[in-house]
Length: 464
Figure 1: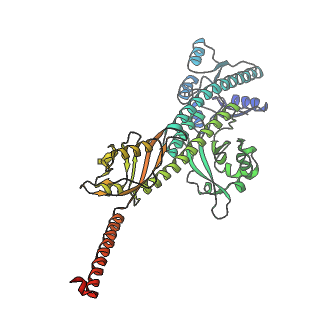
Figure 2: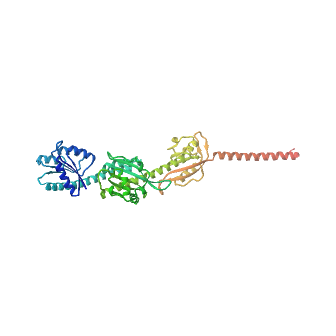
């Protein structure tokens, strides 16, 4: 149904025109006796068509049109008057009026002509608006896609997206709900996570009723469609009664819900509320907003992967940093790229003094030929298995270390990018073994000396 605001200072004409138009069943007509009253009404409600008499006591139709066009350049405006001067017609059309219609003596004829002008203006404006909305929506989607790809913090990116897509769609409230499971009952719940609201529209972000909602119970119709990857669209008055109450309580007249899918699973949905008009989404708009929902889903999935990767990296970082044994990482050119705390203690050098240096600053090369063979094997991706390579401390002392190494490749079958080696300090073990060997040797000497002494005691003549 087309909504019309009819403005004229003649009450009888207003009523006659209203009755004629509403009798067709195509129009809903509100009336105002002055342009000032009409401007106040327009702040509270939008209309599909404005019809105004030229001569009114507070301001004429051209003055009214000039003020109205500052805030609304699109709604059709028809000047309907008894004055037919050519300069007035030109001024009206140049000022943004869609039609200038002169009143006649036969009311039926003039009302029929007015109805034709209304139909023509609405059809033309709908066509123009559709193209404008399409271009505006596509431009907004392109910017939203760029933000979702470039912004590292996904929550900030999503809020920016809502701030852009809100004005582009000319809706009153846009929001995102996330689905999650009750840890105790395993029931599927939904909670509002993000929101954008138009001026004068109440935010629902802090509404406790929209947190931890048992979705399947509260909105079974929407749940069934969204969970199957389908959109929910239409006028609230046509929704199932079970969902109409909660939507109407938020002042929603028309609604569009688009599922957000992450890793082929229902993650939640993005919703578009119109609280002013019975807005009906066309097929192209729905498909475009489905593309947006898919982009949001991809951004959420990517952020989840990056978060898992960050946690894994933190775990590995802590593992390497706090490992009790020395760890060294070097690139194919044998330049040190990473050492852990245990390696710093082993060498007596802080990490920043070692990073970028050749491996020779750490490893004590007693045998150049063996060293070359070991480096070649590491370069070829071969693993070291308990290979003993001494390490030189900054104070000149030498530690004896057994090393295990592993090659690191960029991808499966890709080039070698680094080698990581984990060492086991056996210096103390070797010292103890040397002391043990020395003790055994001394015991043997002592036994030999004791044997000679005992033999001398038993055979004193042999000694003489």
